[in-house]
Length: 463
Image 1: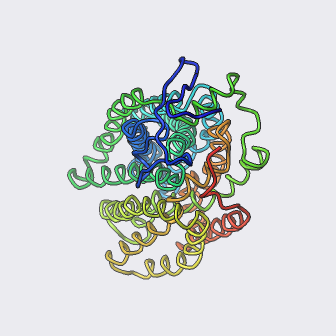
Image 2 (image 1 turned 120 degrees about the vertical axis):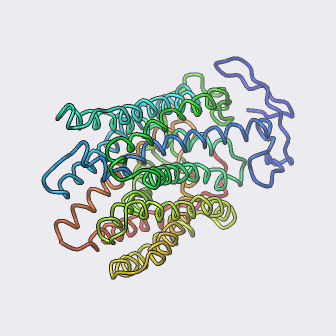
Image 3 (image 1 turned 60 degrees about the horizontal axis):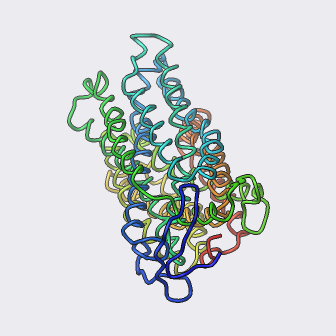
């Protein structure tokens, strides 16, 4: 398709005019990758990326706040004579949300490939708000008996279905809006918003615990983070309604009116092969994320002797470091490539996870525990910075949201969502609080092997 200074790009909505300002090689003069004029004004580009990031932040706040309130929810909805059994049931419900993610990835991903990324993102934020409010309003076990945990599981299924479609759709949306040579930086904001959502959830749970007494939190205060998340989801829905579809998707619509999303959707191979690679690529990513950023407050409370609120504040510090350093890693990956940073994260966890856990379990100070959380956040940032761009670059635009979501969500459902459950079970089965470390080491080793077989894609044009 020929590109002029002022191109005419037809799509289902009619003819759209895009101003084109480049340096003659199809690249815009834009130092940070958000304000270029390659396929739309800088204002449209910034608004689209900000709207996607804020919506994604709220989406993951809603999804993750359950994990941060786990010890409270265990007593309200999954009472048992043994605290470990009660907590296992709570984390099982947490994992159920991830089990629904592959279905959401397939159905919402296909919607994103057939009807556009914007449509899919509006669906995901609406479903997540519904699931979150349902948890916040659910009667507890004392009120309605076994129907209480059933309601929680159903709400988690809605949240998981939404999250399965959100990750791939938002990643495709952001990366497809990025200029050539800036995909690592722009894609990193997807992970900034994910970490920001976790930080917001952790901080909100910690704030509730700081302001209210333990009895008040257990009685009614735990509902505040869930109801707040549902309310602010409406803000994200409004923002997503007022952005444009990605230029890359519009080009595909212009070139293929049928939009057969099940056609070849991988760069240089069959989409199933690329989806399998995305699956292996995600294992270390999701295990490290959910062990060190979702399960860690519970681990610190039960095995390090920290007060629940102090554990949440410590976790929030690690998340803050992650939020601040992910864009730097994304930007660096545009300079030196994706693979060096991805491998550095895997190797870092393989070398440091065991000694750091062992040191914390030896009765160290809160300062040392916070320092470990910061280091874990930095190691995750090395992966989360280049990660969104690297996984998106495995696929062509036609089918990217579907196949990328499938590979990613299956790995998250199997290895990440049940990471807190697996960790709790491993500790109970072995009697050693160090047991989760071996889960982390195995995940890092598998993903490192996958990365070694991947081509470097940082300088490829996005198909």
